[in-house]
Structures are given as C-alpha cells and as structure tokens.
Length: 125
Image (tube, rainbow, N blue to C red; front, top):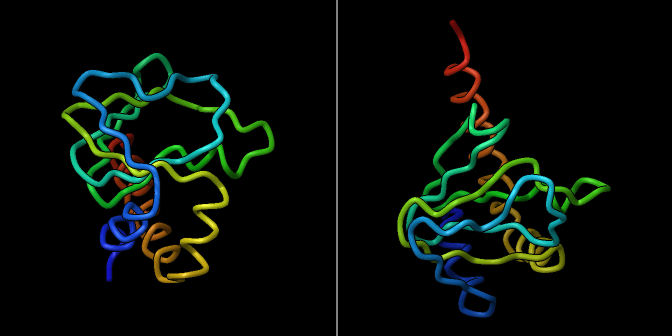
C-alpha cells in the first residue's frame, strides 16, 4: 500500500472535498487546523508573493505545518490548478492514519524529502 492508497482508505471514513480549478484553498498567514491529501488533481503552493511555487500531485500532502507548528500558521497560498478531490485531515485524523498504517508516515516523509530536494535543486544557479 502506498500513501495514495492509504489516503483513499481514510477517505472512505473521512472528509473529502471537491475543489474546482482556480479556487484558493488557503492563504498565507491564515491559521489552519488541518492538512490536505491530494486524491485527484494538482494543487499549487506558492510563497513569498509567488516568488516560489511547486505543484502537489495525487498521493502528496500539503498544509501539514499548521498541525505541527505552535502558531498553526499557513506559510503560503494553496490553489487548485485543476479540479481536485482533497482529503481533509485534522491532527486527530493524521495521528490515526499514522497509528493504523505506520508506513504512511514513512511515505509522506519520503515525499516531503523529494519535494524539498527538488526545490533546492531549482534554486541552484
């Protein structure tokens, strides 16, 4: 089972939202109490007034910082680039997912690490 399979299993018991292309999901500076898993579609994260951005695909998560930082602040904007189905996970749902499927946490860490490496490679001049 991979991260997308785990998110699909959680979606059967959780909150899934449909977000049309172009819709803002959250804005930098807002307080957040959930993270999102992309089940379908592509989400663009942007920060520093759109100076930096990345695309988030099915199987990836975004917005986790709001669950793990003391101020629960969003550090960028998230917008649907295409029609999306998103799994909404509050802290309780995320901890449940990690407890029920520990590999989910490993897969998500691997995904985040790959994304950070790709961003780092993009900033080399």
